[in-house]
Image (cartoon, rainbow, N blue to C red; front, side, top):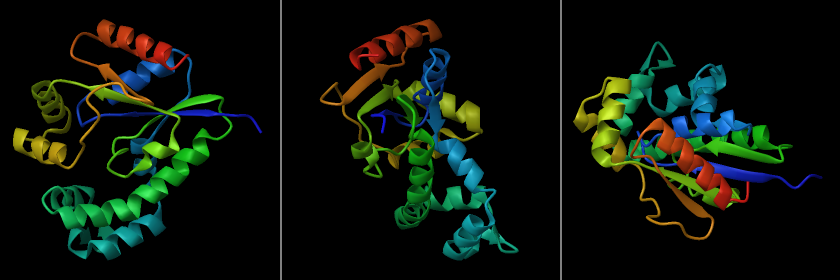
Length: 192
């Protein structure tokens, strides 16, 4: 069996994980996304039935509404724990299945540390960005208020503050060109 190297890419909301992963993909590496897997689960009737049972107040005619669940879980820590306990194992099982057979692969995992999943990966790249820039980016991208973005930020982290062991920080406080250079440096640190 081929020895594979699985590398997680994580960071707080609005840090630039997706842009970083696009660079890695352009450099020729396979990249998988927990967000894409989650989106696909929302097309699975069994998954939706389970969500509706967990959050009946967030369902209409037996169908859960994503925006209602989001509003609930980002204002109620227990509801967030319940959602994560239901969805994360399903997402991670599918992610690891997709990564099998690849010599080197990357996975965008937004809630890596929150779920304790860092141990499943050989290395972790943590994309960092100045907080105000993150708030502006997410507010513009998702049509949220600054307070709604901050609520999502509070549900994440904490993240390591410096390179240590298998954790490598990637600063994303500049241009796309600077992020590309930071990506090249991070891959070099991983021996790629």
